[in-house]
Image 1 (cartoon, rainbow, N blue to C red):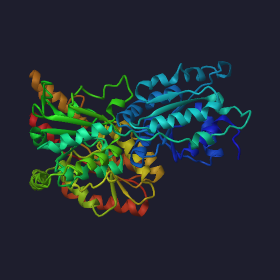
Image 2 (cartoon, rainbow, N blue to C red):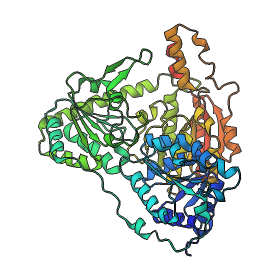
Image 3 (cartoon, rainbow, N blue to C red):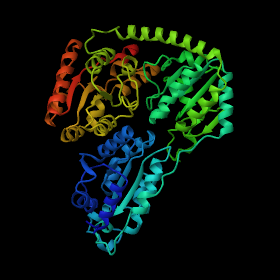
Image 4 (cartoon, one colour):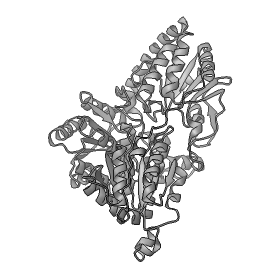
Length: 579
């Protein structure tokens, strides 16, 4: 049927641009859009009901991150936007093109309801998030809905990607259209192509790399594209170079024999660093004494640095997530999806027999490192509460025969050290800050809805306490998620900070738990999960009980089609060095 209202036009745009889901917490300022999605659109995009706007944006973040297709999150006027602002900021940090749609009370003040429409309106609403979205807009007419939406979509999805915010006047949404409004031209308009590197600069990079004796590849966001992910390994194999994966995305398979992630020794001896899509290169190449704040270089003097990526195109003038300035010898602005094949082609023409010899030596060193990691993982095998490495091993044993996906958190790096993670499909990259893990994990699960994959979420306790209502959304959607709690009954990270301060000042370390401890009373996460319709077991603190519990939970997911949570109690491993 033909669009009758302004909000129907927004639905035409959502459908036209292939938006499959819209996550929201209901709000009056977009009641027109809500009605249009349900009745005019036939619940397409499908509404994902959330208990908090922060969760709505986080779900869109996780979904978009794993599918590469933008998802919409709809937030209610000023208050919903403010609720969601932290999740929008993390989408900016993670370079994910989330489409955040909002609404405002009628800009025609004569149409506003007393009080409520006034406190739900602002001049201009996008100001609240403008510093950490790529673009925001508040179209003043229905005729401008389509050009505004199309521009926002293009800006969000053009690399480096990021969230955008579009705000719709409640009056324009609800008013009947005076004439038909077509969105065909905007939907069919060509999208921008990716930026390619300067050919002369690529040739310079190839020459420098070919002459290096000990080149090292450092990658962070390259794995956001499947072709670029494969190119990292192909380039490393060609030139015989170790790869340090900073894991904002998975950039090389965890068991690849040239994966030296976490090995500072490789950086120490490098004579050339090839940095690919690194957001904060200074952090990657320097170590920090967390007590004195002194910084020491991980690379030796004279080590050349070649940088390829889109860092210089980051949009925020406010957020300082770019880190401290790191001088480099050659900086190439390009999408690595295009630049890496071209660079590899140039290097193939310069190939030297010494590269294969270097690769063979590195692969031998890598095998020795893996043997050492396996040995280290067994040090506290029978400890109770559970040693993180033991928990990672138990989860791996339970899921390795499944078609699985790890959502984010990695159990203190033990999952990538012990699991065979062979593609970004298996793991979209490391987790972000507190209050992001559960929402983004739901989005990852939604992105894999119906494809048979088992979604594995290693869930921190403090993170879940921010947004426990997210459990309801997972149960409502019947997402095939296995949540294994990383529960140390504390705000662990900050406890460690307090111990550092106590050590430096000579104050009482035994009091560092005050304001950090979550054991009095200890939350019952299994009971919490059951109350939202999940299968739940726990608390489990004996490592021998973990394997059987995992198998029971996975069986429930397969047979009943509902999510399952195991509350596993994990040892505060890192705190022992401060006692």
